[in-house]
Length: 260
Image 1 (cartoon, one colour):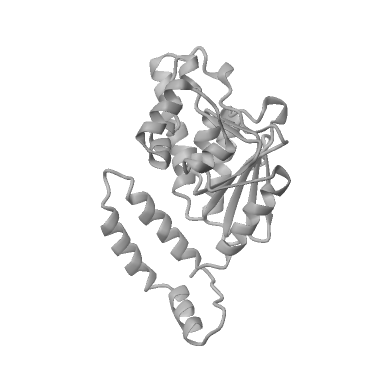
Image 2: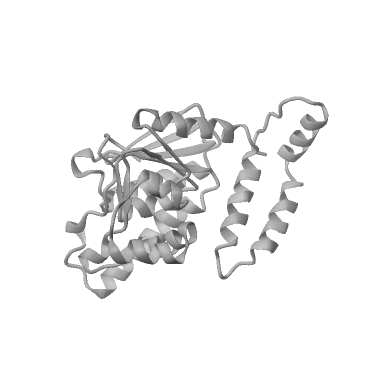
């Protein structure tokens, strides 16, 4: 696929996905979502990709929200389908990615932009970032998982307050409440994300994928998180990476994982 709204580059086994609509503050439209769905899905089976770094072009915004002009005239059924497609094809796909995904949040992460960041496994924010879910000011609520993931990350009370007031919060406040993992100067944003990814790249890929499934199962009311952990733990014993990891430990050397 030739991307029109994304910049996609594989470098040192990290897939860099940059939403490239800086003149629109990287707002999410149908084309962006379609391309994101394709890029994330393709990465799942690409053995060269060990992790994904997701960010927005320019210094003003990660993603400043959804492109309201595209759905302003939608009716009830169209609105439900919009949310359903976004959940299934993009946001849930990122959360369930078997390759770790880090969001590098530069500037505004509002509405669908914050929802996109929350779907990622780890969030690093620049110190000028502003985060919020302002949907109620439009007569809406977050529709791409925001009501669920925000409560999971910061707790029910703070999620109610952020969504009810529609207020933006600073990167430092987001860090204090557990919404982002790290806050760094904007000039250090990508370097911090890369520092974390360099560590992740050294770990066993299949074990990382198992960890994603086990952790996510704990937040899925239809799943048994503990049983998923047991199953995934057992599955790891049937991998070459397990044999390599344990052998390397006993031989007091660095493991060389192949994702097999």
